[in-house]
Length: 475
Ligand SMILES: [Zn+2]
Image 1 (cartoon, rainbow, N blue to C red):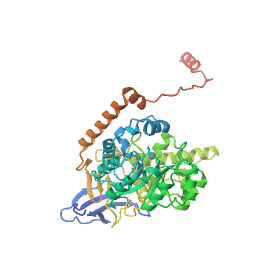
Image 2: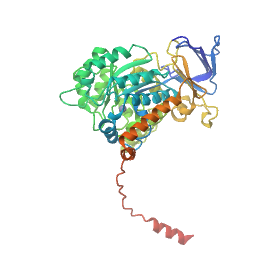
Image 3: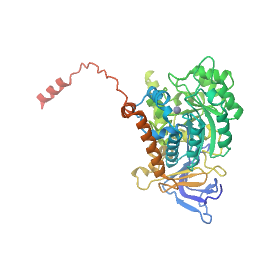
Image 4: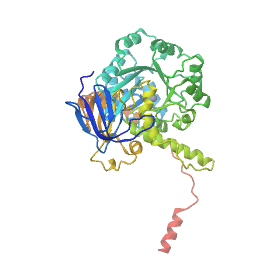
């Protein structure tokens, strides 16, 4: 893996994401092979190095998304006006079964490309459309064809987790495809529905036997609740590796169990705000000391970039803090949650959730997953006064200038390197055409355009027409 050319990022504002949250101005980052060799000033460029002018830019670790249903990217924006209920009906009951292995491939491929383009160098593919291991092979084929870092979180919404995880095909898939490469991690992805018989127990036992983490949608209004957390706790399945997605509608008791067992929460604020899992939970779990990572959930609704995640998470947390204070007739005079916190959640937070101390930080010896945010053509690129604030509230995916994954340049000067976007487009077009014709035009349109409930307009005692006639008289 060490054949990549040395890279020297020259003269940027570096956010190494160390414990001190340093801001290093006019600083260089030297990458040799797959690792960061040095962070410092006036470093010399080795023979044959690619020197990237990072002046007026921000150099930070690659961002990490801990929960994204990548297969759904083939349906980008289709569900923009869905609620969670409509999503469940569409994917779980009506049309999720239509997806063939090539459709999983198409979604994953586009999603993987989209991620590295946005500087998201690691994505957990929360892949719950794997009806067969042919689907799973297709998912991995796509991930392996894109030079990003991925974690396949294996799931199947069409079969109980204890069943699919016990199948010989699943075991064979794990043996064949999960080889311990640090470019492709592995988790098991399933939800605990709170059935008193705890039917998910067998799947947890498989995960324990394989030594892999479980990621689970927890605290989702109307779907998962405290019962699932209690069952996991009482059976010893809550571990530091467990990632609880959303965790929005849980009691203090459940948060205490998560905190005590060392797990982390993947907060998908854009999703929670719009779909209805519950209020984005950072404002609660901060008080419990639970580690946070960020995620975008699915591009069937939202974007696949973590700038949006940082921005909305900061906004939702502060919005709630104000609201809670106003209810007590108080005023928030100082923000507890800072821009630097959400930048840390988007980088180190994800690395910690995945048990990857070699990611999420720019320091010698760490993996060279590096992002340069710089856009000379953008009026938003200056002045660069508060780099954390700039990343959280000003930057966007178009400002991602250069991206390195494992020391390899995958995007440079705003262009993806060695990525066949035309092939990704062709694959997605085939999937859309297939789904549309299988569903029929009427169902396709209905799926995309859910009915709007009737609005109730309240009686208003203040008559605008009176004001108007009054105003006419005086003029
Ligand atoms: Zn999800």
